[in-house]
Amino acid sequence: MQTTNVFGDPVITCSTTPITGFFRDGCCHTDATDQGSHTVCIVATEEFLAFSKSVGNDLSTPLPQWQFAGVKPGDRWCLCAARFLEAHQNNAAPLVVLEATNEKAIDIVPMDVLLKYAFYAK
Image 1 (cartoon, rainbow, N blue to C red):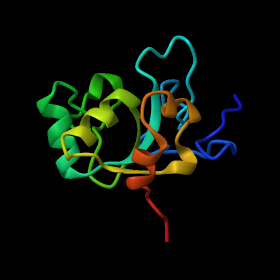
Image 2 (image 1 turned 60 degrees about the vertical axis):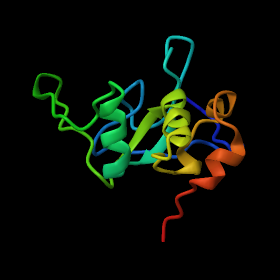
Image 3 (image 1 turned 135 degrees about the horizontal axis):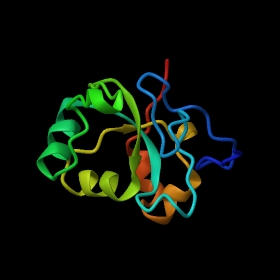
């Protein structure tokens, strides 16, 4: 599956540990069946995970029956664009790996907001 990131380049892998993405392929790919638009590659923080749990999207609790260890601070994860925007609006947004963020995220989150949280790997 070829997908373009917010810069118009091919999307790079967001994470394989934990495995992420709507299709669980490590990338923030999307299509019409992805109603949540799992398109923003984030670097999770304690603050964001607590916020997400408080609004009903518990990403940190392990679910062994689904082979899901839970997202931990520092993990990368393909997040729903609307959830990212909500976190931004509540001062709890995590950093964003723009090269791994699908261009479809911009349909929901303005590019200037994504740029504000840009994660730069060293």
